[in-house]
Length: 626
Figure 1 (cartoon, rainbow, N blue to C red):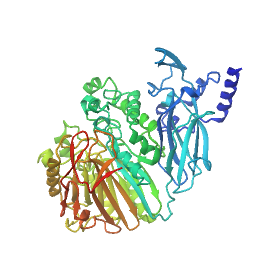
Figure 2: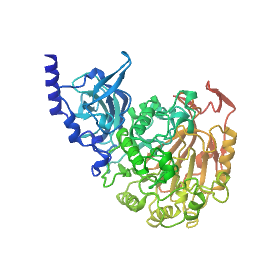
Figure 3: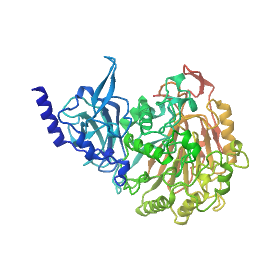
Figure 4: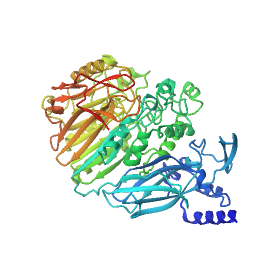
């Protein structure tokens, strides 16, 4: 009798649940079947006589939301029989063996799809439901669920939850927010900007601090969400209990899934995803270091790299990384006519357009691979070199023009790597003074961008960057082509805010002292006219609070990331007035807490903070315990 009821219940679920609503069966592109899942084959495997016992399933990695539109938002969760990830997208049979630790033996567990219900409402009690439904997930998509919740109101806070169908087995309650309509008058919007979270180098405290303050509406992530290295190659995870799994350089689809899953055990990252809608884009380490269209720094489709990297060609490795990223991130499918498009834009009322670029994976010309630095230096001015490829470049310039034409007050450009020229000869030597893996290695592409802005009179541009593991604030200028006054900022066409890493170490060394870091910052600031503030020492993030009259940028530093805590220091604050196209003078109010400020001073009180992991030099006045 019990089996008959379960069978009947499962049959009812089959009728009501949807395969195609789970976007991950179609991601990252419907137009490339080799990257997608054959739903027909998965359905065929479904056995109504062997439904999942809801008590054997768990929501393993919280919930997330992202890519907000005025009437919809992406919701994400993972629900499966194990926290471990599926090792292949190939189904050998309808069952998989899991180890039963209580009985110390392997048991066969059904790989049949799991039915999941979702609900989104305008209240925490989920009584005023705006959208709901049932979807399937399965081992084929690593038991992830990603749906587009629809029928929502613009610029509205919503709460959402998942549950295993016909059970009380529920996920945590998530909070999200839609974007305003393009023609809405919005007074102020706050975003937190992050990049470069490296698991073995520390705890992701920066993610949690914006949650504890509840200070923003949205999170923008500029990439390096994960790192592909083995722990011993880059990090000291053993000393703080943070060894990324699998503990080797990741290559296979399972590897990328497992690494993403490991990162998503950090409690502050879970909290950020649970409370804010994310707008993410990848950098290089979501695939591998210094990735470009045809390879990476370690894997260039040579016979040697093919052998060293486990006999996997670069294209296959890249496909594995892309597949896992789309499974695990709350990102919607763009109008994809190829398998790697992640570049897209968001209109946030009349206030601003957020244009998210892919300057790494899509169609980037060869970059600095460490062994070819002199060659890249030689060709860095070549007109044929592009960070984005011609299709994305055309789209980018068109997006800038359309934003200005529609009357958006601001244009925010999410670019993974630093746009401004940075003379770093102290680090790289006089022969190769620039970072050729950034925009400095693609000067014609940068000149084309600046030409489009200046020649079309497009102002109020705010460029965002990550990648460098340091903080940089610059006027946005066309050196050598347009006159520029570093004292007043006249001649600038906007501002660039580049942020430090969540945990990834300082580019001048993980154990650099505060005094050494500030000395380097002073040298860099003096060597670059447009660079107004620079800090190397602190890990952290920055917030932008955007209104019609101005953009306020606030940089926050973490006193330590080797323990989980809510401490942060207010490092510096900057203002950009609408129509000024430059940083307001005196820059940073003339005083900052860290780094080096052009025309200003760095003030630090002689106070110390005992973190339990060493003594840190901080200002009690600016230390917030969240």
